[in-house]
Image (cartoon, rainbow, N blue to C red; front, side):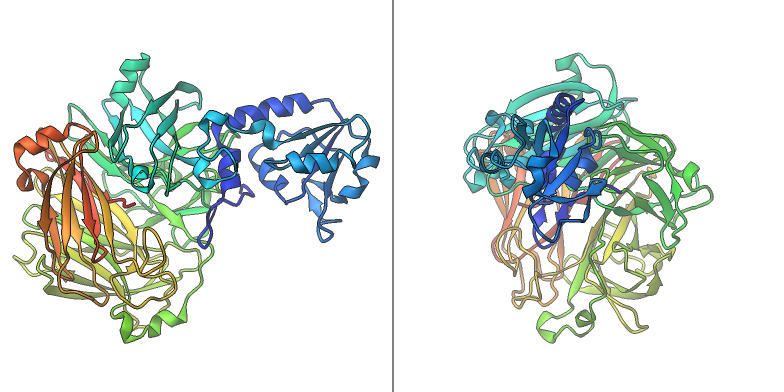
Length: 630
Protein backbone atom coordinates (compact mmCIF):
# COMPACT_ATOMS: atom_id res chain seq x y z
CA UNK A 1 0.00 0.00 0.00
CA UNK A 2 1.21 3.50 -0.78
CA UNK A 3 2.09 5.32 2.45
CA UNK A 4 0.35 8.53 1.47
CA UNK A 5 -2.30 10.57 3.24
CA UNK A 6 -4.95 11.41 0.70
CA UNK A 7 -8.22 12.26 2.44
CA UNK A 8 -9.31 12.74 6.02
CA UNK A 9 -13.05 12.84 6.74
CA UNK A 10 -12.57 15.68 9.23
CA UNK A 11 -10.08 17.81 7.30
CA UNK A 12 -10.86 16.91 3.71
CA UNK A 13 -8.37 16.28 0.93
CA UNK A 14 -4.62 16.48 1.44
CA UNK A 15 -3.24 19.30 -0.70
CA UNK A 16 0.33 18.01 -0.53
CA UNK A 17 -0.80 14.73 -2.06
CA UNK A 18 -2.41 16.54 -4.98
CA UNK A 19 0.66 18.72 -5.46
CA UNK A 20 2.91 15.66 -5.63
CA UNK A 21 0.61 13.49 -7.74
CA UNK A 22 -0.04 16.07 -10.48
CA UNK A 23 1.24 14.80 -13.86
CA UNK A 24 3.34 17.94 -14.38
CA UNK A 25 4.89 17.51 -10.93
CA UNK A 26 5.73 13.92 -11.86
CA UNK A 27 7.68 15.06 -14.91
CA UNK A 28 9.52 17.70 -12.88
CA UNK A 29 10.41 15.27 -10.09
CA UNK A 30 11.80 12.85 -12.67
CA UNK A 31 14.06 15.66 -13.91
CA UNK A 32 15.02 16.51 -10.32
CA UNK A 33 15.98 12.91 -9.56
CA UNK A 34 18.08 12.78 -12.72
CA UNK A 35 19.94 15.89 -11.56
CA UNK A 36 20.65 14.23 -8.19
CA UNK A 37 22.00 11.01 -9.67
CA UNK A 38 25.63 10.25 -8.84
CA UNK A 39 25.90 12.98 -6.19
CA UNK A 40 26.20 12.70 -2.41
CA UNK A 41 22.66 13.53 -1.32
CA UNK A 42 21.34 14.58 2.08
CA UNK A 43 17.56 14.60 2.49
CA UNK A 44 16.08 17.11 4.94
CA UNK A 45 12.57 16.22 6.12
CA UNK A 46 11.40 18.93 8.49
CA UNK A 47 7.66 18.25 8.26
CA UNK A 48 7.47 14.48 7.75
CA UNK A 49 6.74 14.72 4.03
CA UNK A 50 9.51 12.45 2.78
CA UNK A 51 7.53 9.19 3.11
CA UNK A 52 4.83 10.55 0.79
CA UNK A 53 7.45 11.72 -1.70
CA UNK A 54 9.20 8.33 -1.66
CA UNK A 55 5.91 6.44 -1.90
CA UNK A 56 4.91 8.25 -5.09
CA UNK A 57 8.45 8.55 -6.47
CA UNK A 58 10.57 5.72 -5.04
CA UNK A 59 13.56 6.17 -7.40
CA UNK A 60 15.21 8.93 -5.38
CA UNK A 61 18.99 8.28 -5.35
CA UNK A 62 19.85 6.77 -1.97
CA UNK A 63 20.64 9.59 0.47
CA UNK A 64 23.71 9.41 2.70
CA UNK A 65 21.50 10.66 5.52
CA UNK A 66 18.05 11.95 6.44
CA UNK A 67 17.87 14.96 8.74
CA UNK A 68 14.96 16.15 10.89
CA UNK A 69 14.32 18.97 13.34
CA UNK A 70 11.70 17.39 15.63
CA UNK A 71 13.58 15.87 18.55
CA UNK A 72 11.00 13.07 18.72
CA UNK A 73 11.84 12.07 15.14
CA UNK A 74 15.59 11.73 15.80
CA UNK A 75 16.53 8.05 15.77
CA UNK A 76 13.36 6.91 14.00
CA UNK A 77 13.39 5.04 10.71
CA UNK A 78 12.84 7.41 7.79
CA UNK A 79 13.19 6.28 4.17
CA UNK A 80 15.22 3.22 5.09
CA UNK A 81 17.73 4.98 7.35
CA UNK A 82 17.90 6.42 10.85
CA UNK A 83 16.92 10.06 11.14
CA UNK A 84 19.60 12.43 12.41
CA UNK A 85 19.24 15.94 13.87
CA UNK A 86 19.45 18.67 11.26
CA UNK A 87 22.18 20.29 13.34
CA UNK A 88 24.49 17.51 12.09
CA UNK A 89 23.84 18.31 8.42
CA UNK A 90 27.15 20.15 8.01
CA UNK A 91 29.11 17.00 8.90
CA UNK A 92 27.28 14.92 6.27
CA UNK A 93 29.69 15.79 3.45
CA UNK A 94 26.73 16.10 1.09
CA UNK A 95 27.18 17.70 -2.31
CA UNK A 96 23.50 18.47 -2.61
CA UNK A 97 20.77 18.91 0.02
CA UNK A 98 17.14 18.21 -0.93
CA UNK A 99 14.46 19.65 1.34
CA UNK A 100 11.22 17.67 1.14
CA UNK A 101 8.97 20.73 1.13
CA UNK A 102 7.23 23.20 -1.13
CA UNK A 103 7.36 26.96 -0.50
CA UNK A 104 10.81 26.40 0.99
CA UNK A 105 12.55 29.76 0.40
CA UNK A 106 12.84 30.61 4.10
CA UNK A 107 13.83 27.08 5.02
CA UNK A 108 16.59 27.09 2.42
CA UNK A 109 17.87 30.40 3.79
CA UNK A 110 18.12 28.93 7.30
CA UNK A 111 19.67 25.68 6.09
CA UNK A 112 22.34 27.51 4.12
CA UNK A 113 24.04 28.14 7.49
CA UNK A 114 23.84 24.46 8.43
CA UNK A 115 24.71 22.83 5.10
CA UNK A 116 28.18 21.61 4.11
CA UNK A 117 30.25 24.34 2.41
CA UNK A 118 29.57 24.48 -1.30
CA UNK A 119 26.55 22.15 -1.15
CA UNK A 120 23.69 22.93 -3.51
CA UNK A 121 20.33 23.38 -1.78
CA UNK A 122 17.19 22.23 -3.58
CA UNK A 123 13.55 21.74 -2.63
CA UNK A 124 10.32 20.43 -4.10
CA UNK A 125 9.77 23.90 -5.49
CA UNK A 126 11.62 22.48 -8.48
CA UNK A 127 8.38 20.56 -9.10
CA UNK A 128 5.98 23.50 -8.80
CA UNK A 129 3.35 23.99 -11.44
CA UNK A 130 3.83 26.98 -13.75
CA UNK A 131 2.57 30.25 -12.30
CA UNK A 132 -0.01 30.48 -15.07
CA UNK A 133 -1.70 27.37 -13.68
CA UNK A 134 -2.07 28.69 -10.13
CA UNK A 135 -5.32 30.13 -8.83
CA UNK A 136 -3.69 31.50 -5.68
CA UNK A 137 -0.20 32.59 -6.65
CA UNK A 138 0.62 33.78 -3.12
CA UNK A 139 0.25 30.35 -1.49
CA UNK A 140 1.28 27.32 -3.49
CA UNK A 141 -0.29 24.65 -1.27
CA UNK A 142 -3.71 26.23 -1.46
CA UNK A 143 -6.44 23.69 -2.16
CA UNK A 144 -7.82 25.85 -4.98
CA UNK A 145 -4.51 25.50 -6.84
CA UNK A 146 -5.24 21.77 -7.11
CA UNK A 147 -8.85 21.52 -8.18
CA UNK A 148 -8.14 18.31 -10.07
CA UNK A 149 -9.74 14.99 -10.87
CA UNK A 150 -9.46 11.98 -13.17
CA UNK A 151 -12.13 10.49 -15.43
CA UNK A 152 -12.44 7.14 -17.15
CA UNK A 153 -12.39 8.13 -20.82
CA UNK A 154 -12.88 5.89 -23.84
CA UNK A 155 -13.65 6.06 -27.53
CA UNK A 156 -13.23 2.48 -28.64
CA UNK A 157 -15.15 -0.53 -29.93
CA UNK A 158 -18.28 1.48 -30.64
CA UNK A 159 -18.42 3.18 -27.23
CA UNK A 160 -17.85 6.90 -26.63
CA UNK A 161 -17.63 9.12 -23.56
CA UNK A 162 -18.87 12.58 -22.64
CA UNK A 163 -17.96 14.52 -19.50
CA UNK A 164 -20.61 17.06 -18.50
CA UNK A 165 -20.56 19.67 -15.77
CA UNK A 166 -21.12 23.38 -15.23
CA UNK A 167 -19.04 26.34 -14.18
CA UNK A 168 -20.34 26.17 -10.62
CA UNK A 169 -17.22 28.03 -9.47
CA UNK A 170 -18.76 31.18 -10.95
CA UNK A 171 -21.35 31.05 -8.19
CA UNK A 172 -18.52 31.51 -5.69
CA UNK A 173 -17.00 34.48 -7.48
CA UNK A 174 -14.74 32.85 -10.10
CA UNK A 175 -14.44 35.05 -13.18
CA UNK A 176 -11.71 33.43 -15.30
CA UNK A 177 -11.96 29.65 -15.31
CA UNK A 178 -9.82 27.47 -17.55
CA UNK A 179 -9.37 23.71 -17.86
CA UNK A 180 -5.93 22.15 -18.27
CA UNK A 181 -6.47 18.66 -19.67
CA UNK A 182 -4.27 15.69 -20.40
CA UNK A 183 -5.56 12.52 -22.05
CA UNK A 184 -3.71 9.23 -21.36
CA UNK A 185 -4.01 6.05 -23.37
CA UNK A 186 -4.16 2.51 -21.97
CA UNK A 187 -0.36 2.38 -21.58
CA UNK A 188 -0.20 5.70 -19.73
CA UNK A 189 1.23 7.56 -22.72
CA UNK A 190 0.01 11.10 -23.37
CA UNK A 191 -2.40 11.24 -26.31
CA UNK A 192 -3.21 14.95 -26.07
CA UNK A 193 -2.70 17.95 -23.83
CA UNK A 194 -4.61 21.20 -24.16
CA UNK A 195 -6.45 24.00 -22.38
CA UNK A 196 -10.05 25.09 -22.72
CA UNK A 197 -11.52 28.38 -21.61
CA UNK A 198 -14.81 28.07 -19.73
CA UNK A 199 -17.42 30.64 -20.59
CA UNK A 200 -18.09 33.16 -17.77
CA UNK A 201 -21.00 32.72 -15.42
CA UNK A 202 -22.78 29.39 -14.83
CA UNK A 203 -22.01 28.05 -18.29
CA UNK A 204 -22.19 24.42 -19.28
CA UNK A 205 -19.02 22.39 -19.81
CA UNK A 206 -18.82 19.42 -22.14
CA UNK A 207 -15.86 17.27 -23.28
CA UNK A 208 -16.70 14.61 -25.86
CA UNK A 209 -14.39 11.77 -26.87
CA UNK A 210 -15.55 11.82 -30.50
CA UNK A 211 -14.74 15.52 -30.78
CA UNK A 212 -11.29 14.92 -29.27
CA UNK A 213 -10.51 12.17 -31.75
CA UNK A 214 -11.41 14.46 -34.61
CA UNK A 215 -9.58 17.49 -33.21
CA UNK A 216 -6.32 15.68 -32.41
CA UNK A 217 -6.59 12.98 -35.09
CA UNK A 218 -6.43 10.23 -32.52
CA UNK A 219 -6.84 6.48 -32.93
CA UNK A 220 -9.33 4.61 -30.80
CA UNK A 221 -8.37 4.80 -27.13
CA UNK A 222 -9.36 3.65 -23.66
CA UNK A 223 -7.64 5.49 -20.84
CA UNK A 224 -8.18 8.39 -18.50
CA UNK A 225 -8.58 12.13 -18.64
CA UNK A 226 -6.85 14.36 -16.10
CA UNK A 227 -8.78 17.58 -15.43
CA UNK A 228 -7.24 20.60 -13.69
CA UNK A 229 -9.51 23.60 -13.10
CA UNK A 230 -7.59 26.88 -13.04
CA UNK A 231 -9.32 29.88 -11.46
CA UNK A 232 -11.64 27.84 -9.24
CA UNK A 233 -13.45 29.41 -6.29
CA UNK A 234 -15.42 27.86 -3.45
CA UNK A 235 -14.92 24.21 -4.46
CA UNK A 236 -11.64 22.39 -5.06
CA UNK A 237 -13.61 19.25 -6.00
CA UNK A 238 -14.15 18.74 -9.73
CA UNK A 239 -17.64 17.26 -10.04
CA UNK A 240 -19.07 15.87 -13.23
CA UNK A 241 -21.43 13.38 -14.82
CA UNK A 242 -19.84 10.91 -17.23
CA UNK A 243 -21.89 9.38 -20.01
CA UNK A 244 -20.61 6.27 -21.75
CA UNK A 245 -22.73 5.36 -24.74
CA UNK A 246 -22.89 3.57 -28.07
CA UNK A 247 -23.74 6.19 -30.73
CA UNK A 248 -25.17 3.47 -32.97
CA UNK A 249 -26.30 1.00 -30.33
CA UNK A 250 -28.36 0.52 -27.17
CA UNK A 251 -25.61 0.71 -24.54
CA UNK A 252 -25.85 3.73 -22.24
CA UNK A 253 -24.33 4.47 -18.82
CA UNK A 254 -23.93 7.42 -16.50
CA UNK A 255 -21.47 7.61 -13.62
CA UNK A 256 -20.55 10.19 -11.01
CA UNK A 257 -17.19 11.91 -10.60
CA UNK A 258 -14.20 9.80 -9.64
CA UNK A 259 -13.61 11.13 -6.08
CA UNK A 260 -10.11 12.55 -6.36
CA UNK A 261 -8.45 10.83 -3.39
CA UNK A 262 -7.22 7.22 -3.61
CA UNK A 263 -8.40 4.81 -0.94
CA UNK A 264 -7.11 1.59 0.63
CA UNK A 265 -10.23 -0.31 -0.34
CA UNK A 266 -13.36 0.03 -2.44
CA UNK A 267 -16.58 -1.90 -2.06
CA UNK A 268 -19.85 -2.28 -3.91
CA UNK A 269 -18.44 -4.23 -6.86
CA UNK A 270 -21.00 -6.91 -7.79
CA UNK A 271 -19.96 -10.40 -8.75
CA UNK A 272 -21.18 -11.40 -12.23
CA UNK A 273 -24.69 -12.72 -12.64
CA UNK A 274 -25.29 -15.68 -14.91
CA UNK A 275 -24.34 -14.80 -18.49
CA UNK A 276 -22.51 -11.63 -17.43
CA UNK A 277 -18.92 -10.53 -17.76
CA UNK A 278 -17.76 -8.06 -15.08
CA UNK A 279 -14.69 -5.97 -15.91
CA UNK A 280 -12.93 -3.89 -13.28
CA UNK A 281 -11.06 -0.97 -14.86
CA UNK A 282 -7.86 -0.43 -12.87
CA UNK A 283 -6.55 3.03 -13.68
CA UNK A 284 -3.25 4.00 -12.10
CA UNK A 285 -3.68 7.50 -10.66
CA UNK A 286 0.06 8.11 -10.29
CA UNK A 287 3.21 8.31 -12.37
CA UNK A 288 4.86 5.42 -10.51
CA UNK A 289 3.90 1.91 -11.55
CA UNK A 290 1.60 -0.35 -9.57
CA UNK A 291 3.75 -3.34 -8.55
CA UNK A 292 2.80 -6.88 -9.43
CA UNK A 293 0.20 -8.09 -6.92
CA UNK A 294 -0.28 -4.70 -5.21
CA UNK A 295 -4.00 -4.73 -6.10
CA UNK A 296 -6.16 -7.68 -5.10
CA UNK A 297 -9.79 -8.82 -5.00
CA UNK A 298 -11.72 -10.89 -2.51
CA UNK A 299 -15.28 -11.90 -1.87
CA UNK A 300 -16.75 -9.46 0.62
CA UNK A 301 -16.51 -10.97 4.08
CA UNK A 302 -13.75 -13.39 3.10
CA UNK A 303 -10.22 -12.08 3.62
CA UNK A 304 -8.73 -14.61 1.19
CA UNK A 305 -7.41 -12.27 -1.51
CA UNK A 306 -6.44 -12.98 -5.10
CA UNK A 307 -3.72 -10.66 -6.42
CA UNK A 308 -3.88 -8.97 -9.82
CA UNK A 309 -0.75 -10.15 -11.59
CA UNK A 310 1.57 -7.94 -13.57
CA UNK A 311 2.78 -4.37 -13.19
CA UNK A 312 0.61 -1.46 -14.29
CA UNK A 313 2.52 1.54 -15.63
CA UNK A 314 2.05 5.10 -14.45
CA UNK A 315 -1.34 6.53 -15.51
CA UNK A 316 -2.07 3.30 -17.39
CA UNK A 317 -5.42 1.53 -17.63
CA UNK A 318 -5.98 -2.21 -17.39
CA UNK A 319 -9.17 -4.22 -17.77
CA UNK A 320 -9.41 -7.02 -15.18
CA UNK A 321 -12.04 -9.68 -15.77
CA UNK A 322 -13.56 -10.46 -12.36
CA UNK A 323 -14.94 -13.76 -13.69
CA UNK A 324 -11.34 -14.98 -14.10
CA UNK A 325 -9.92 -13.61 -10.85
CA UNK A 326 -12.74 -14.98 -8.68
CA UNK A 327 -14.19 -17.92 -10.64
CA UNK A 328 -17.42 -19.31 -9.27
CA UNK A 329 -18.34 -16.13 -7.37
CA UNK A 330 -21.75 -15.09 -8.67
CA UNK A 331 -24.27 -12.31 -7.97
CA UNK A 332 -25.54 -11.50 -5.41
CA UNK A 333 -22.07 -12.06 -3.92
CA UNK A 334 -20.07 -8.85 -3.56
CA UNK A 335 -16.41 -8.17 -4.28
CA UNK A 336 -13.99 -6.05 -2.25
CA UNK A 337 -11.16 -4.21 -4.02
CA UNK A 338 -7.84 -3.96 -2.15
CA UNK A 339 -6.58 -0.94 -4.06
CA UNK A 340 -3.61 0.07 -1.91
CA UNK A 341 -4.25 3.78 -2.61
CA UNK A 342 -3.06 3.35 -6.16
CA UNK A 343 -6.23 4.64 -7.83
CA UNK A 344 -9.13 6.97 -7.37
CA UNK A 345 -12.61 5.50 -7.34
CA UNK A 346 -12.54 3.00 -10.23
CA UNK A 347 -15.21 2.06 -12.73
CA UNK A 348 -16.55 -1.38 -13.48
CA UNK A 349 -18.32 -2.57 -16.60
CA UNK A 350 -20.91 -5.31 -16.93
CA UNK A 351 -21.40 -6.89 -20.36
CA UNK A 352 -24.37 -9.05 -21.22
CA UNK A 353 -26.02 -9.86 -24.53
CA UNK A 354 -24.37 -7.11 -26.55
CA UNK A 355 -25.17 -4.41 -24.00
CA UNK A 356 -22.74 -2.84 -21.59
CA UNK A 357 -23.30 -0.80 -18.44
CA UNK A 358 -20.76 1.05 -16.33
CA UNK A 359 -20.97 1.99 -12.65
CA UNK A 360 -18.57 2.74 -9.82
CA UNK A 361 -17.72 1.20 -6.45
CA UNK A 362 -17.39 3.50 -3.43
CA UNK A 363 -14.70 4.32 -0.90
CA UNK A 364 -14.58 1.81 1.93
CA UNK A 365 -13.85 3.71 5.14
CA UNK A 366 -10.99 2.59 7.40
CA UNK A 367 -11.58 5.17 10.13
CA UNK A 368 -15.05 4.17 11.33
CA UNK A 369 -16.13 2.11 14.32
CA UNK A 370 -19.65 1.10 15.43
CA UNK A 371 -21.39 4.03 17.10
CA UNK A 372 -23.70 3.02 19.97
CA UNK A 373 -25.35 6.47 19.99
CA UNK A 374 -27.06 5.72 16.67
CA UNK A 375 -29.19 3.06 18.34
CA UNK A 376 -30.54 5.66 20.72
CA UNK A 377 -30.85 8.77 18.58
CA UNK A 378 -33.52 10.92 20.17
CA UNK A 379 -36.96 11.63 18.80
CA UNK A 380 -35.57 15.02 17.77
CA UNK A 381 -33.92 13.21 14.84
CA UNK A 382 -36.90 11.05 13.87
CA UNK A 383 -35.99 8.03 11.75
CA UNK A 384 -32.32 9.03 11.78
CA UNK A 385 -30.13 7.79 8.94
CA UNK A 386 -31.92 7.20 5.63
CA UNK A 387 -30.58 5.88 2.34
CA UNK A 388 -33.04 7.08 -0.32
CA UNK A 389 -33.08 5.50 -3.77
CA UNK A 390 -35.37 5.69 -6.80
CA UNK A 391 -37.95 3.13 -7.76
CA UNK A 392 -38.54 3.69 -11.46
CA UNK A 393 -42.11 3.04 -12.75
CA UNK A 394 -42.75 -0.63 -12.04
CA UNK A 395 -44.86 -1.06 -15.17
CA UNK A 396 -41.59 -0.85 -17.10
CA UNK A 397 -38.75 -1.40 -14.62
CA UNK A 398 -37.76 -4.04 -12.09
CA UNK A 399 -35.73 -2.77 -9.11
CA UNK A 400 -33.35 -4.65 -6.83
CA UNK A 401 -31.57 -3.25 -3.78
CA UNK A 402 -28.49 -4.75 -2.15
CA UNK A 403 -26.99 -3.39 1.11
CA UNK A 404 -23.21 -3.12 0.70
CA UNK A 405 -20.67 -3.04 3.56
CA UNK A 406 -18.69 0.16 3.15
CA UNK A 407 -16.37 0.24 6.17
CA UNK A 408 -13.70 -2.23 7.17
CA UNK A 409 -15.25 -2.73 10.61
CA UNK A 410 -18.82 -3.39 9.43
CA UNK A 411 -19.49 -7.00 10.36
CA UNK A 412 -23.27 -6.71 10.18
CA UNK A 413 -25.95 -4.52 8.62
CA UNK A 414 -29.28 -4.37 10.51
CA UNK A 415 -31.59 -2.85 7.91
CA UNK A 416 -35.21 -2.37 6.92
CA UNK A 417 -36.63 -1.28 3.58
CA UNK A 418 -39.44 1.32 3.54
CA UNK A 419 -41.19 2.20 0.26
CA UNK A 420 -43.07 5.39 -0.61
CA UNK A 421 -45.38 6.55 -3.37
CA UNK A 422 -44.65 9.92 -5.01
CA UNK A 423 -47.19 11.60 -2.70
CA UNK A 424 -45.24 10.48 0.39
CA UNK A 425 -47.57 7.63 1.36
CA UNK A 426 -45.73 4.61 2.73
CA UNK A 427 -46.83 1.65 0.65
CA UNK A 428 -44.77 -1.09 2.25
CA UNK A 429 -42.00 -2.05 4.64
CA UNK A 430 -39.76 -5.11 4.78
CA UNK A 431 -37.14 -6.12 7.35
CA UNK A 432 -34.10 -7.48 5.53
CA UNK A 433 -32.49 -8.77 8.72
CA UNK A 434 -29.26 -8.27 10.60
CA UNK A 435 -27.18 -9.11 7.54
CA UNK A 436 -23.64 -10.48 7.98
CA UNK A 437 -20.72 -8.87 6.14
CA UNK A 438 -20.61 -11.73 3.62
CA UNK A 439 -24.36 -11.69 2.95
CA UNK A 440 -25.76 -12.41 -0.50
CA UNK A 441 -29.01 -10.48 -0.18
CA UNK A 442 -30.36 -8.60 -3.19
CA UNK A 443 -33.98 -7.74 -2.52
CA UNK A 444 -36.20 -7.80 -5.59
CA UNK A 445 -38.95 -5.26 -4.96
CA UNK A 446 -41.36 -7.35 -7.04
CA UNK A 447 -41.42 -9.78 -4.10
CA UNK A 448 -42.36 -7.20 -1.46
CA UNK A 449 -44.44 -4.58 -3.31
CA UNK A 450 -48.12 -5.24 -3.87
CA UNK A 451 -49.30 -5.72 -7.44
CA UNK A 452 -50.15 -2.36 -8.97
CA UNK A 453 -48.30 -0.38 -6.33
CA UNK A 454 -45.69 2.16 -7.52
CA UNK A 455 -46.78 1.66 -11.11
CA UNK A 456 -45.69 5.25 -11.76
CA UNK A 457 -42.62 4.92 -9.57
CA UNK A 458 -41.66 6.30 -6.18
CA UNK A 459 -38.72 5.69 -3.92
CA UNK A 460 -37.37 3.43 -1.22
CA UNK A 461 -35.35 4.11 1.90
CA UNK A 462 -33.01 1.78 3.74
CA UNK A 463 -33.01 2.51 7.47
CA UNK A 464 -31.38 0.92 10.49
CA UNK A 465 -33.56 -1.60 12.33
CA UNK A 466 -32.10 -3.24 15.44
CA UNK A 467 -34.89 -5.71 16.21
CA UNK A 468 -32.41 -8.60 15.78
CA UNK A 469 -29.44 -6.71 17.20
CA UNK A 470 -26.52 -5.45 15.15
CA UNK A 471 -24.39 -2.32 15.00
CA UNK A 472 -24.36 0.94 13.06
CA UNK A 473 -21.81 3.56 12.15
CA UNK A 474 -23.86 5.86 9.90
CA UNK A 475 -22.06 4.73 6.73
CA UNK A 476 -24.91 2.60 5.36
CA UNK A 477 -24.62 1.99 1.61
CA UNK A 478 -26.46 0.02 -1.03
CA UNK A 479 -26.34 -0.89 -4.71
CA UNK A 480 -29.55 -0.28 -6.63
CA UNK A 481 -30.09 -2.13 -9.90
CA UNK A 482 -32.91 -1.36 -12.33
CA UNK A 483 -33.88 -3.57 -15.28
CA UNK A 484 -36.03 -2.66 -18.27
CA UNK A 485 -38.56 -5.50 -18.43
CA UNK A 486 -38.79 -5.29 -22.22
CA UNK A 487 -35.29 -4.54 -23.53
CA UNK A 488 -33.39 -6.25 -20.71
CA UNK A 489 -31.07 -3.25 -20.36
CA UNK A 490 -29.86 -2.63 -16.82
CA UNK A 491 -28.39 0.29 -14.91
CA UNK A 492 -27.10 0.49 -11.37
CA UNK A 493 -25.97 3.06 -8.88
CA UNK A 494 -24.84 3.15 -5.28
CA UNK A 495 -24.76 5.65 -2.49
CA UNK A 496 -24.89 6.07 1.28
CA UNK A 497 -27.16 7.20 4.10
CA UNK A 498 -27.50 10.56 5.82
CA UNK A 499 -29.82 12.21 8.28
CA UNK A 500 -32.14 14.34 6.18
CA UNK A 501 -34.07 17.53 6.86
CA UNK A 502 -34.03 17.70 10.64
CA UNK A 503 -33.57 21.05 12.32
CA UNK A 504 -31.59 19.44 15.13
CA UNK A 505 -28.11 18.15 14.35
CA UNK A 506 -25.99 15.14 15.27
CA UNK A 507 -22.29 15.65 14.66
CA UNK A 508 -22.01 16.66 10.97
CA UNK A 509 -25.55 15.60 10.06
CA UNK A 510 -27.68 16.70 8.26
CA UNK A 511 -24.80 17.40 5.90
CA UNK A 512 -24.51 20.63 3.95
CA UNK A 513 -22.80 21.37 0.63
CA UNK A 514 -21.38 24.51 2.21
CA UNK A 515 -21.26 25.75 5.78
CA UNK A 516 -22.07 23.85 8.96
CA UNK A 517 -25.00 21.46 9.40
CA UNK A 518 -27.94 21.28 9.14
CA UNK A 519 -27.97 20.97 5.37
CA UNK A 520 -31.42 22.25 4.50
CA UNK A 521 -30.93 23.43 0.95
CA UNK A 522 -30.55 21.90 -2.50
CA UNK A 523 -28.44 22.75 -5.54
CA UNK A 524 -28.35 19.85 -8.00
CA UNK A 525 -27.19 19.53 -11.61
CA UNK A 526 -29.35 17.78 -14.22
CA UNK A 527 -27.83 17.03 -17.61
CA UNK A 528 -30.23 17.51 -20.52
CA UNK A 529 -30.72 14.99 -23.26
CA UNK A 530 -31.16 15.40 -26.97
CA UNK A 531 -33.37 13.99 -29.70
CA UNK A 532 -33.62 10.24 -29.27
CA UNK A 533 -31.86 10.23 -25.90
CA UNK A 534 -33.63 12.31 -23.28
CA UNK A 535 -32.56 13.16 -19.75
CA UNK A 536 -34.54 12.53 -16.60
CA UNK A 537 -34.20 12.69 -12.83
CA UNK A 538 -35.90 11.28 -9.76
CA UNK A 539 -35.98 13.92 -7.03
CA UNK A 540 -36.60 12.59 -3.53
CA UNK A 541 -37.57 14.55 -0.42
CA UNK A 542 -36.22 12.21 2.30
CA UNK A 543 -37.39 13.25 5.75
CA UNK A 544 -35.89 11.80 8.90
CA UNK A 545 -38.19 14.24 10.71
CA UNK A 546 -39.75 16.73 8.30
CA UNK A 547 -39.68 20.37 9.28
CA UNK A 548 -42.10 21.32 6.49
CA UNK A 549 -44.76 19.42 4.64
CA UNK A 550 -43.67 20.17 1.08
CA UNK A 551 -40.61 21.35 -0.81
CA UNK A 552 -40.42 24.64 -2.67
CA UNK A 553 -38.33 23.55 -5.63
CA UNK A 554 -37.26 25.49 -8.69
CA UNK A 555 -36.16 23.83 -11.92
CA UNK A 556 -34.06 26.46 -13.70
CA UNK A 557 -33.25 25.82 -17.35
CA UNK A 558 -29.88 27.26 -18.39
CA UNK A 559 -28.40 27.63 -21.84
CA UNK A 560 -24.91 26.32 -22.41
CA UNK A 561 -23.77 29.94 -22.18
CA UNK A 562 -25.10 30.11 -18.60
CA UNK A 563 -28.09 32.31 -19.42
CA UNK A 564 -31.33 31.45 -17.63
CA UNK A 565 -33.98 30.56 -20.19
CA UNK A 566 -36.97 29.40 -18.16
CA UNK A 567 -37.93 28.03 -14.79
CA UNK A 568 -40.59 25.71 -13.44
CA UNK A 569 -41.75 25.48 -9.83
CA UNK A 570 -42.68 22.12 -8.32
CA UNK A 571 -43.58 20.97 -4.82
CA UNK A 572 -42.66 17.53 -3.49
CA UNK A 573 -44.34 16.22 -0.32
CA UNK A 574 -42.17 15.09 2.60
CA UNK A 575 -41.16 11.44 2.04
CA UNK A 576 -42.33 11.85 -1.55
CA UNK A 577 -40.62 12.06 -4.92
CA UNK A 578 -41.00 13.43 -8.42
CA UNK A 579 -39.98 11.98 -11.77
CA UNK A 580 -38.61 14.96 -13.69
CA UNK A 581 -38.76 14.79 -17.48
CA UNK A 582 -37.51 18.07 -19.00
CA UNK A 583 -39.30 17.51 -22.30
CA UNK A 584 -42.65 17.46 -20.45
CA UNK A 585 -41.88 20.45 -18.21
CA UNK A 586 -40.36 22.96 -20.62
CA UNK A 587 -41.47 24.24 -24.01
CA UNK A 588 -39.70 22.67 -27.00
CA UNK A 589 -38.41 26.08 -28.07
CA UNK A 590 -36.83 26.69 -24.65
CA UNK A 591 -35.15 23.30 -24.66
CA UNK A 592 -33.83 23.88 -28.17
CA UNK A 593 -32.49 27.29 -27.10
CA UNK A 594 -30.50 25.71 -24.27
CA UNK A 595 -28.15 24.03 -26.77
CA UNK A 596 -26.13 20.84 -26.35
CA UNK A 597 -24.37 22.19 -23.23
CA UNK A 598 -27.58 23.30 -21.53
CA UNK A 599 -28.64 21.97 -18.16
CA UNK A 600 -31.17 22.34 -15.38
CA UNK A 601 -30.20 23.66 -11.96
CA UNK A 602 -32.47 22.23 -9.29
CA UNK A 603 -32.65 24.72 -6.46
CA UNK A 604 -34.48 24.61 -3.14
CA UNK A 605 -33.63 26.90 -0.23
CA UNK A 606 -36.05 25.21 2.20
CA UNK A 607 -35.00 21.54 2.30
CA UNK A 608 -32.40 19.13 1.04
CA UNK A 609 -33.56 16.95 -1.81
CA UNK A 610 -31.64 13.93 -2.99
CA UNK A 611 -31.60 13.02 -6.65
CA UNK A 612 -30.70 10.41 -9.23
CA UNK A 613 -30.41 11.15 -12.92
CA UNK A 614 -29.68 9.59 -16.27
CA UNK A 615 -30.83 9.39 -19.85
CA UNK A 616 -33.11 7.08 -21.83
CA UNK A 617 -32.75 6.27 -25.52
CA UNK A 618 -35.11 4.90 -28.11
CA UNK A 619 -33.43 1.47 -28.12
CA UNK A 620 -34.36 0.55 -24.56
CA UNK A 621 -31.12 1.81 -23.06
CA UNK A 622 -31.10 3.96 -19.95
CA UNK A 623 -28.62 5.16 -17.36
CA UNK A 624 -28.80 5.93 -13.67
CA UNK A 625 -26.53 7.42 -11.00
CA UNK A 626 -26.83 9.86 -8.12
CA UNK A 627 -26.74 13.55 -9.00
CA UNK A 628 -24.01 15.92 -7.88
CA UNK A 629 -24.54 19.14 -5.95
CA UNK A 630 -22.44 22.19 -5.30
